[in-house]
Image (cartoon, rainbow, N blue to C red; front, side):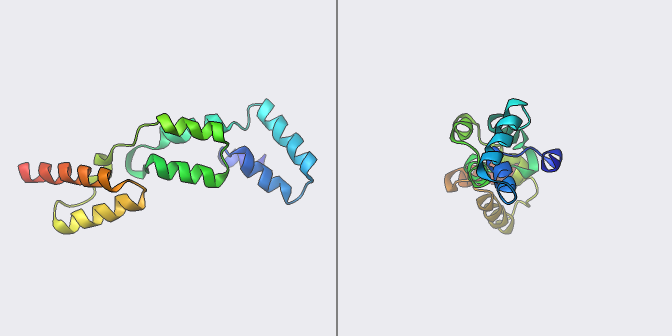
Length: 134
């Protein structure tokens, strides 16, 4: 319960924490109880993460999928990511100067956030065009 107070967690995360101290049957019973009470819900957590994936801290949907998979999200919850829209790259690009150096830094930054090369090149093209029009 202490771990659930700090942030929502996937059922697999709770199960892994419990497995260090309890047998499999007890772990299953606790997880089932938490799910019945609505304290653990992988689908709700994915929806929350999709909604929070905006602004300066956003990552690509593929990166979000990787992170959720790594944390143990169930398959039906991960399916929600298939319909999720990629976050806007314009907000992420605002921190970079409109120079060749800024473009290179922005490219590396967006790549580290899991965005595809095509998306990065397109966003940088628009961003740099806007700067030359000013």
